[in-house]
Length: 394
Image (cartoon, rainbow, N blue to C red; front, side):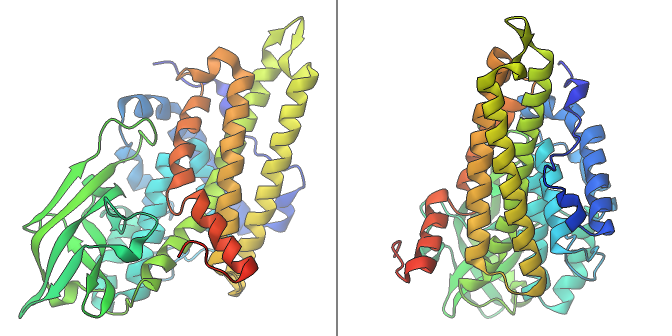
């Protein structure tokens, strides 16, 4: 397996001196994750992607660095700013979407709902282990027949004399086959509620999804619940209705908006590096007019995405951001990443499709990121409703 060219180490894309708008702590966190990606992630990601393997050996170090549950307070979590969490996602996705997805799910879809909706006993039991990487979690919302319409889920939990009886199935579950606990959302007589289901519980089956073109260095699974008996304290007591899982998705989408710009930056930097070294018609590829136009477009789109993400981050920190602001950032980031990956592939020519270079890997991954945590169409309609007051998707 060929190793990535040494030039693929990131210098960072910062045309408008956005670093000056970050705190020293945020810059330090970003730089530490950038070094981790350069030194530990990039050298193995082509091999992991080709083999369809998540690099579990990196989990302990990510825990030690405070990347798991980073913006949460207490219980072993780092308590960083939302901007710092965004920067973490940006740098991780520059390495690979699978790495960022692991951290995003662990943080925003598992630790956040336990932190926000769990009992003190649930927090004490799970959050320190999840923060260190000793335990892994997954998030069960999407079903085989219900993705963009989670409110129509058919997974159901019914009360029993001793607790709950859970039946149903979940699909496209990141981290599922490596998880110790699943945050599962189910219909109850009181509406949608969240439950903690531990791996190994009788009737709970996890199947790994194989044969993926995208997110190959990520674990994707199906969860099945056949008369799964849960104790009374398995329920997240503060969860109430669809707004609870949707709040988790807002947190995850926020991280994705930053991650997508990291992916776009990786493609831009690789295209610039490659084009500066590749000689065509007697001069570097980047010396030709059409290629300079492509780089200018990529740089402009990335810079706009960085500014949008930073503004939404600061709004989250002062409490003024809502789901529509996050939808704009996720939608724009994924569109930018998709375009940059495609254009960078053009600039690398035939080399754009081989494992030695990261572009085709990013191209494949962004197709999943573009779709999950709310499709582009869904985010478009969320913005449309905010603009017009009419919900076109209902």
